Image (cartoon, rainbow, N blue to C red; front, side, top):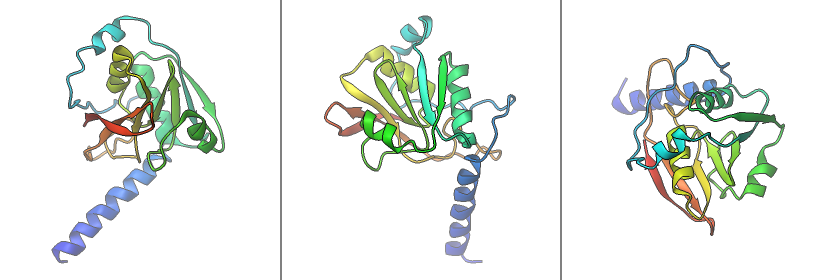
Length: 175
């Protein structure tokens, strides 16, 4: 097997693992992998000490990775209400998720949209800083992001983006 075939096989296996994660059932023993933020979340502590606001998560009733992300948010202290819907697209449109920035679930928290497998630490920093923005997005389903952990521990670098009030995006954190 040459290098190109080996690299292709590695990518195929990683993609298969990511897609399989969406069919996983949450495990009470699965602990989310820690991530580090590109920017120090100094303001996060102020939110962590207060009672966190209710998070409403819109997701497919059959998506296991979404359930794992919900568990990650609950473990971080967020009260979470889950709304299972067959089609999350109208929710994404209503909340202003930019085209091409979608993932498998959409959440609302304290006036912000949270799209995809965004780490709880980033959500807490957003709530502490209160920027004039729509919210945060983590497009796709990157391996190693909360809810997308795989048994091998493999991770992909991923960037959480801030969706500004005009719908453009900028880097919020790199993991």
